[in-house]
Amino acid sequence: MEIISPGQYSLVYNAFSFTFATMAAATLFLWISRSQVTTTYKTALTISGLVCAIAAYHYFRIFESWGESYQLRNGVVTAGEVAFNDAYRYVDWLLTVPLLLIELVLVMGLSQKETMSLSTRLGVAAALMVALGYPGEIATDNTTRAIWGTLSSIPFAYVMYQLFAGLGASIERQPDNVRELIKTARLVTFASWGFYPIVYMIPYTNLTGATVITGVQVGYTIADIIAKAGVGVLIFIIAVRKSENETMNLAAA
Image (cartoon, rainbow, N blue to C red; front, side, top):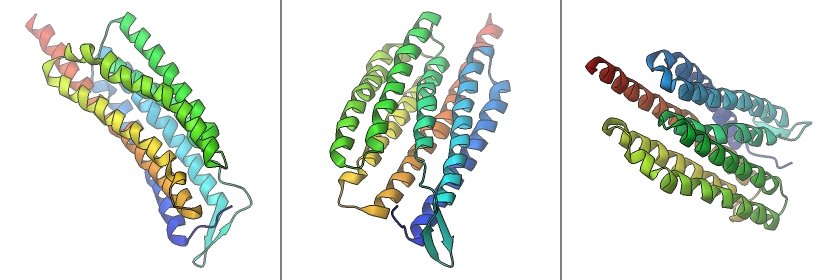
């Protein structure tokens, strides 16, 4: 196991702690906020909160695993008795990544047929993307990592195509006061998801050892906060505005 510096240990430790708190707070916010939206959009907020709840649990486990793998005593970091378990992160993604796409589809308020079709196709592709990426993540050589990373990029490209081409017409049919917000949520999803492959490729650089470990853990953590808590807040704002539209339409009728 690579021995890291006290600064690197503390940076990752604090990043995990901060992310756990962020995800837990976002979960409470999103679930409590269900009372502010109409029935149509409650499921979207429920799923968005569920995404953050799952992430909070796994970040707690990641946080614990980090503390068991390394000990900082008297300014010196030593290896623990067990290796750091990074599988928690991929288990989290396997559950949350499909749900992130489903919450975006649900908040758009499409027909039941469109919702089921898009949710199924995007959910399966997202799960496949995560499953194909894991063997490369745990590989000990960059060739194997590159092979699985390339395979994982195929469903990733499909998801991005559907977000921009497949959802394009549906987004244009959205109310004026939420259309740009939905486009922003889509763009933030694209940007944060695009950051994961960049972090995945850190081992290909001239960086080595503990620097790679630190960069990967902090990089994935930043992407998770944006993709889950950040997009979750956008889903909430969209749901509130669309609920206000429904209420005004009913009042006008």
